Image (spheres, one colour):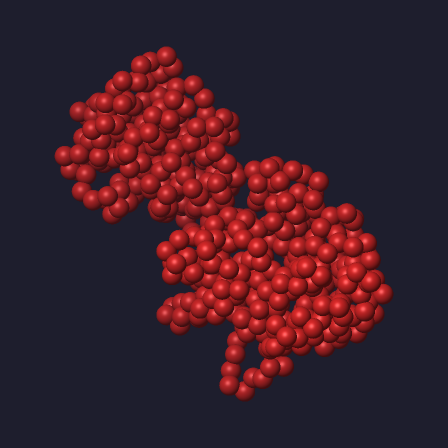
Length: 522
């Protein structure tokens, strides 16, 4: 599913009007009528029921006026609250205002300084509220009587349907711009928007429903829209093929460079993530002092002990041993539980810059690279970096708060600047590559906010890489399957907490099976 930002959506609307000759008022009519259809599908017959419709400036308000008219035709009792003076409503929206004025539909002006008694009275008796205040073009903070009305709407236990985007939500970033509507249903037009899925925006949207307003598919196909939502329809095609004549060598050999005293669990969890996604062989490279832990706890994996430092950390002296061990492997994971000893740091830099294999870079390896940012650019083979917001802050020198406010933009710019694939973890994980592509992951839940979950993800992505999956597809598959497994555990447990990283790894085959079943049912 393509996700169009505000600028791209405006261009598509304009192309439909200018190139294809579809009048803007037709697009508006399709939007409003389609929204009423979605209201009926979700909430039932509106006949005889009061609907409070809040209309703002611009085409979003025009859509709300079309909705009022169609609800009236179905026997509903719409009440329109007009939050701008009529002379400020222009174009197609103004035409629809004139139509509504000729119908027995109450239009109540609600301007700065007015009392809100009638708003509260109407909401108290409403079956439904329609939010048509602001659309995707909003980029400033909501203030004044608009903010007051939004606050009142949110306080009433009346279902809210938002037109295109909840008013007050930035459609590009998913950030609330001050007061923001919390909708039960958002009906969006043409294409979905990044703000519908990038958190915290997803928490304001409620159920999302898409209406085709008549933009020609050729226009959408030719538009340079490089942000999409990850969906099963694409992902199931990226899973590695398997047949009866295959053997363990066919399914790849992954090298994991991980672990240090006190952090052996991270390496084990990474290996389990890889083993559970179907990789043929896993070799776990670790300092000699902790190697016996892996040999006893992870019998399915082979081990490659290296000398390490006196403290049991990886040493730069291990470089050639690891380079030799990488021969015959198809992919590498580096970082889980690695530690940040200066000797280890030098080793990580050498491996990152010289190892000509696709590599997943996670955890402590990211923290090491953060101190040597200039070394990240233009690696010899694909690099998939998997930071959480704190690690991303260290990699960029930008605060984690700012990272969270601009997740999509930050992931994209970092990937493009450094020629890597960047997987920015968190609610609504964002994956971006060096060519400007970006994907938003809809799976996962708060139960993933626990130790070891990222280690499982690193191994999962590495396992897909070792099986020959394209690095971009491996990153996308890893994020989606990881979250899907978490959702399965959450459903089983009845809550978004309480499951462990080991349990998540064990659930990965079920998530992969769900994708395989989807492909067979297509």
